[in-house]
Length: 170
Image (cartoon, rainbow, N blue to C red):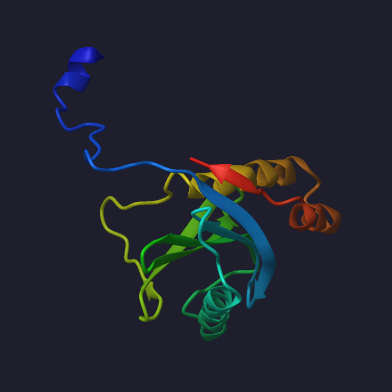
């Protein structure tokens, strides 16, 4: 194994000036849009805030996208993460559970005063950063409990009502 890793001189390389830090995940009011019910998570550095204005803009964008069919949900449950990445960059990750055990995702990015734009998939693209994985892991555990349940109305209600993840990650 050591030889295989040695052949990948740049494997695991991180820019010398990168300084890692923790981020805070906090739940906010869930979002019900055409075709989906989404648990909501804000992700940010502890010294910053997700203002009502920022969150309302993201919520309105997702609701409009779902209503127009640009974001075609299919009577699904899932989650959304509004991630203040730093500077003027925001990510909006809309995720739903499909095919019983798969988490599907549509990612939007916004820079500065621009509007949210879909991030088009490439042959190998980013999925979740270390901070987003905190919410994803929590929701994976919740969805697994749902899959082991009777998956009836009461089970869906329990999934939606389950306590949300809150805390520092990274």
